[in-house]
Structure formats: structure tokens, C-alpha cells
Length: 423
Image (cartoon, rainbow, N blue to C red):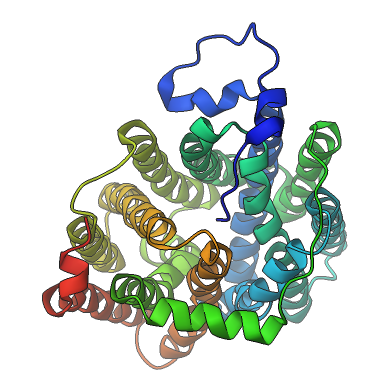
């Protein structure tokens, strides 16, 4: 995430001096503009998770080789992050960020309503679903850099770290509420109802974007796109700690995170639960993630980050292996909780380390490269898992990928002095 001082804008954000004494864990919410932004995105993210759970359930119900097609749809939905996020960061530096967000959020709202209409009329096919997932992912790839870059302008400098943690918390709280509500909504209204409710949820973030007081930006030109990208990659490669962290996030994004795409498959075929059961599985992961984000927000910083990232990450991947072979709903719920908790601690550790290690001049490019690896590689991993599932049992395929990832994390720690010295 690009960091910038709150400055004069920050003073304006807190000019309502009656500001109440907010608890330290949520103090960034004392900033009125950030409160609007946070609540609007929270509502929208709940709708997005309702759509995600309905999308996966539709694939499981309508496609015989559901594990393979879950991988295909996951690939189409997330590959835009790999293809377009770096360009989205460049665009975000050249246009008004709020206007760009209004455009991308509107596009995603329209796509949700189109999806609802096709599902309601029973005209939805797997390729139409994949195409709409791709278009939605493209809008998200354009949206994400501007979203992250706006946050520092909505809070005073002293609240920035807390604002980052609260953004992570609201995203993961939506992982609890969205799938849970989505499971019950599907039972009442069908998958088309979930898609429609997601479209309505975008109204909240659009209203928030029009109401926040956002400071005027002086848009400047930068060096050429390719030159900027090349210098960013060279910068990361030249710093051993940053380099090994980038490899670690690459491995986990490619081999472990795709597991989340296949939760609907495990819910229906291995755990034998219905829509609400699927919602509770995803909610357990979200609950663990919220606790992880709250831990980061409350603690502020951790010592021995290299050790925490390595062993916590390896532990998450071991939990995924256990989930892949679990026949018990209760055990699977526990696994999902610890997966969410450990994943947030690991990812937060990497994120904070990357920002701390980077210079101000390079931070934007460093975080765009990080974001591309983190969000762009899971679709390739989902495609690999889907293809493997056509030749070996799905649980074997995903367990093998997570197991290799866990061993890789332990190997990075064993052989990288730079990682062991990361504090």
C-alpha cells in the first residue's frame, strides 16, 4: 500500500473536536471520512461474498465435473489480477482515484445484476459465468490500487496502521456474514437472489464515495510504464529479505490459497452439507481471520517476524492438509478457523515487512508487485488443482499442493539467513 502523510487533509478529517474516545483497537474509525469509506465497503464486501458462495454452489449443482469447473471459474475470476493489477497501479497515479472507484464499483454492480437476470431466467451457462467472473475480476484489478491508495488520505498519520488493520478486519468480517447470509438467502431465493442482493450492496459504497471529503490531488506524470516496472523488480531482487518474502508469498498464493475455491466441492461431496453448511464453513475461516486481524491491530507490531511468517505459514498449510481428508463437519470447522487465523497473521507479517523494508520512492511499485503475486497467482493454482482433480482425487491434489507449500516455507527459513534475521 502506498503511504502518504495525513497532513492538512488529516486535520480536516478530525475537525469535529467532539470526537469520542474510541478504543485503541478501532481508533481509525474516529475519522469521519474513513468511517464512511469503511462502512460502505463492509456492506459491499458482504454482498460480494454472498455472490461468491452462490457462484460456487451453482457450479457444483450444474456441472458434473464440478471440481474442474470450480477451478476454471476461479481462474477466470482471478486471472485479471495477474494481467492488469500492475497497470491498475499506474492508472491510479494518473487519474482521480475517487472517480476511478466510482466507475469500477458501478461496473461491478451492473455485472451482478446481469448475473442475477441470467440466473433467474435460467439462461446462465458455465461460459457466461466464467466471462462475467473475468469482467468482474478486471474491474477489481483496476479498483484495488486506488482503493489502497485512498486510505492514507482519509485518516491522520497516527491512525494509518490501525486503518490498514481495520480494513483487513472488515473484509474478513464480511467473510463471516456474507457466506452465512448467502447460504440462507440461497435456500430462500435461490442463487439469483444472492446475485441480486450483491448488486444492491454496491449502493452503499457508491453513496460513501460521493459523500466523503476527499482532498484534491495534483496528478503528475511518471517515468514510462515498462521502465518503472523493471526498476521495481530490480529493487526487490537486490534486497535479500524482500526477495525471499516475495518468493514465499508466490509459493503460498500458487499452491495453498487456491484451496479456498474448492470449499463448495468439499462441502457437498465430502462433508455432505447443504448451502447453510457451506456458509458456516466459510464463516469459520472468516471468524479466524477477524481474530487474526484484531490481534495485529491490538498488538501493533511483532518481534521475530521471519520466524512467525515461516512457521505460522507452514502451520496453515498443514491445517489445509487435515481439512482435505476430514470427514467430520466439526473438525472441518476447526480447521477453517485456524486456517483463517494463521493466514492473516502470515499475510499481515509479510505485508508489514514489505512496506517497512521498502523506501518511500519505491513502495508503490513494491506493493503492486506484492499484490500481483498475492492476488494474481491463485487463479493459476486453481486451474492446476482443477486439472489435477481430473486425474487424482480432489482431496489428494489439494493436500499435495499444500504439503509442498508447507515444506517450501520451512526450507526458506532453514536456508535463508536473511529471513531468519528479519525482526
